[in-house]
Amino acid sequence: MRRTLKPRLLPLAAILSLLTLSALSAPLAAAEVQTVCTVTVNSADEKEAFRRHLPEARFRFVELVERGRPDWLASACRADVQCDVLIVSGHYDGSSQFFSDQLDTGEHLPVAELERISCSQSCPALFSQLKEVYLFGCNTLNPKPLGSTSAEIVRALVREGHSRAEAERELASLNTGLGNSSRDRMRHVFKDVPVIYGFSSTAPLGPLAGATLDRYLQANGGREIGRGHPSGSLLGYFAPYPMAVAHGITDQDPHADARRDMCQFADERSSIASKLAFVRRLLRSGTAATLLHLDRIEQLMTALDEPARQAPETALALDRIAQDIVASGHFLAFARQTDQPEMRVRMVDVARELGWLSADERREEFVRMLRELQARPAVGLTEVNLACTLNRRHELDGAFSRRLPADDMPHAAVRACLGSAEDHARTLAGLVGGNEADALIAQAYLRHRPLTDPVALQGLAAEIVRMDAPVAQVRALEALGRHHVADRGIVDLLVELYARTPSEPVQDAVAGILIRADRASIASPQLVRTLREHRLESPADDTLIDALIRRLESP
Image (cartoon, rainbow, N blue to C red; front, top):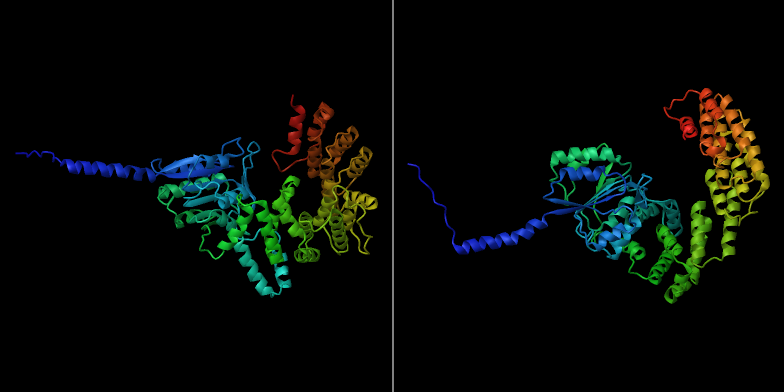
């Protein structure tokens, strides 16, 4: 006979106990749902890979970027979003921001904004519970120092009494402590976060990163996500790419004091006067520490408009810096001795902002530097660009020296940037002389000093058309094309060159000029026939010539 089992009845007290336990466990279960915050300023491949494989019962996704809204990060702060995992997808410029390569996307993520949030506690909820950060961008965890100050810092430390070896060691320590690399900057931003993933150099493009994440997540089922522990499996799947892992700086870190120094600039709760007082302490502590913070000092001083400077506390702090003869003497002496003209320019501009130089004294500093630069036996594109940039308003016209015995085109171009009419003519002659190196220098010069006289432009075009060195001729045509040619006579010369040149790159360069010309003034059936009948064979499937023909034939 089959025995029937009666259900066991629980006492009321036991039922009430179970109900109580159930009620207490409900919020516990809800708390296990983790929030995955995404900042998608470029492709969404990485975000979608995580979304496909992470179960909805355990992970909630929140996109922080609101298209068309510039204050999207502040909006997320006001909404009290609290992230357990952060995924940032975007191109990274290696130092200052994540951005998109899509022309219709204006959203970006400045690192300075992340520093402000991290240092100011203005958004305490957003990143306070982060366990993991995924930075899908090139060089996001690159350990190499940023900028070009390293050599100058070593020089400063040696002048302050350190041996070369000691200076190198001190520089490495300063770079790490002050966040002077992408990796350390991210460690400072994401303070206390146990796991930060990124790339030490070139990252895979979105589709490749998404496909790699698909394979990893299919194999692991998301079990490792949100634990706050580095995943050897994830690093293994990204082994073909330079994925790296780090952790956020903590209060126990030997460089925690250096993060507090960085926050002196980024903390919005600090007054401008307090920040200027910190700048003065830096200036008095030595040139090396000042140079490491030079970009932040530049940003602080540039942001100070005249009303801000007139505020009593700020004016007093600025006056104390301006009257600091010891700090100004060391700073300017070092600026004059550096062999890096770009660094010297930056330091002179900072000295002007700090009240150590008048406008005339600033000009004299640049005149002295440019004359020293012209005396060097070798100059190049960097010096030409620097001279033309410094003299863009022609305030330094006349600050050129006589020719050196071994004079060359770069020296002439530097003098042309400084207002020499004789060297202007010589530089233009170098553009059409057939020497590619000279043409490259002249091309750089004309980016800064385009021709505004139509007769001079016509004459230059005629000289370019007569050239018989195709490589240099392409350079010259590129320089001409930056003038947005509209003159019918020049257009006819270019079409004639196109029809008779044996060089496909020259034809392509001519098409590059014509495609930027006014369509109504050049479009004709005869021009299209010339382009088709005389075009040379090209290794490319779709060239500028094809694009020009389509443009001319469009309604």
